[in-house]
Length: 294
Ligand code: AMP
Ligand code: FE
Ligand code: FE
Ligand code: ZN
Image (cartoon, rainbow, N blue to C red):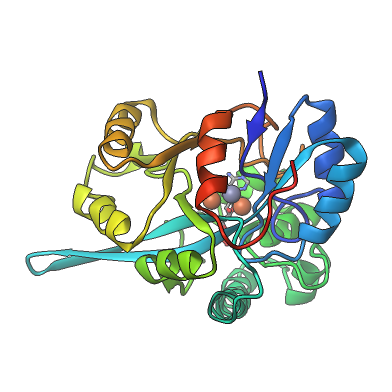
């Protein structure tokens, strides 16, 4: 059995370990092929490749693109955050690179706003957040969580997300994102394969179907969606049969992955969910951006 894990993060975004450490741990965990998919950046790829070759793990270059989908029915309209995995895209493609650049900058402005709000009640500063981040890494809420941990406000990231960083809380500011359908088209134009990450994650929090209606999936397929990440710890069991039959109906690839963020970043463990070799092959066959390193 080949263990293929198609979703992981490093210190180039909100993971706690460098790309090198991630690949060293993947080798020890018995993972044969790993995709590094940092949020909105490909800056970890070269380090990942070097480490992957050294430790004998296959490397699939990827990016987890932060997007926002807007849906309306009648006179109601609502938005929801969609994470779109892009496998094997040409990261130098001008349109894709410009989108990622915009997103990363918007993330920084938004993170500063969250910190300003938090600073009204906690002794947090922007410098303390930056101290938790590598230069040039994509900023996401976990960096703010780490600053709150260093300050002793919370014990760990999970407690920060359950408390001050909750998307329901008063300090929250949403990301300003690229439209999901535009992102799918841009990933394709860059030769990448778009696979929706952890769809309907934790959707027990919302009435079934309201957040991501079937029309939304149909629209993504029309835009060029290539696959669905079904086997992920945050995808509730009750939506998996529906996602599987939808994938079969539209001939989409189905994947599984850990979404590893480091041993102390999240409980997700390398290799805890996997993708079949056949499905990975279908991704590789569709991609024209960059080469996989198997
Ligand atoms: P953001 O994109 O800035 O809104 O931050 C979302 C990121 O926070 C996701 O990519 C997750 O990896 C991370 N995250 C969400 N919930 C938790 C949690 N309970 N513990 C650790 N990290 C989390
Ligand atoms: Fe993350
Ligand atoms: Fe995600
Ligand atoms: Zn992820």
